[in-house]
Every structure is written in C-alpha cells, then in structure tokens.
Length: 184
Figure 1 (cartoon, rainbow, N blue to C red):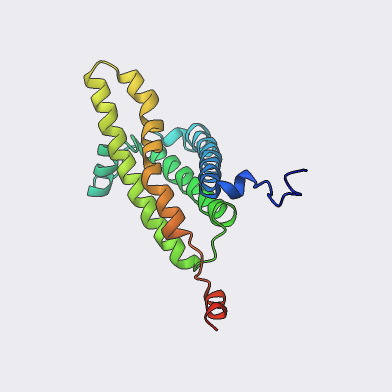
Figure 2: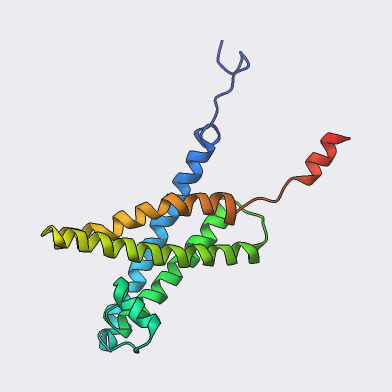
C-alpha cells in the first residue's frame, strides 16, 4: 500500500517548516534588494555624483554625525548612500509585505513602523560597523576589517530586523470572523 492509501500524506517542506521558509524568503528578498541597492549606489557614486563625491558637507550637527559614523566622506557619497539605501529598503518592504509575510495589516502603520526600524538599523549598523573597522585597524587588519565589516554587521542586524518584520511590521489581522463562528 502506498503512503497516501494508508491515510498519511506527504507534507510539503514549505508547510512543515513554515517559519524557516519565511526566513529563507526574507533572506532572499534581503539579498536581492541589496544587489539592487549596490548597483544603484555604484551607478550614483561613479556616474551621477562623480564630480561631487568629495564636496564638503555642511558644518552642522547632523553632518558631523554622518562623518563620524563613516556613512559618507563627501556630499556626493552621502547622496549616493541615502538614495540607494532608500531604494533598497523600499524594495525589501514591498517584497516582504507581499510575498514573504503576505501581510494584511494597516499599510500606513506598517510603513511608519518600518521607517522607525530602518532609521534605527542604519544608525546601529553604521556605529557597529565603524567600531568593528576601528578595532580591526588597531590590530593591523584594516583591509580585512573594511572588507568584512559591512557584511558582518548586516548579518547581525537580522537579529532584530527579522522578528520586527515578522511579528510587528508585517502582521496579519486577527481572524475575528473565524473566532466568532467558533463561539456560536
């Protein structure tokens, strides 16, 4: 007798490991949006803002912070970074909302929560990345620190970005109809 004839059905991987499958899709979306982000960044940096890469930034608290964190060395670099990062995060938001988590929660609230998370993530990864790179430089490993710092910090950010996306930002509405039917 086959397994199906005995009443046992083969469960698909995506159903048996639904949470792992969501994490895999989240990772694929993140990788894909990062590739687009990097492409846009290099296009902006080496073509669009090529002549303003090292143009001095205004002398105010915001740009002193930007310079301190290592986000940008000049206005052209800053513009390239901000535009490409924004595009990458928008792509990730849309794809994760529609394909990874299939969210049906309030899109305005989700967008606001996502923006807060993105601002925190950019600030934290810039600070952590800078700290890592300075540590590696103090050990005589500046080139290695520069090469692996950003990927390590980006992977570390998954510790908070996945749970926030999964359980806070891209939620499902409560199934009130099914609950009402069950209580009748």
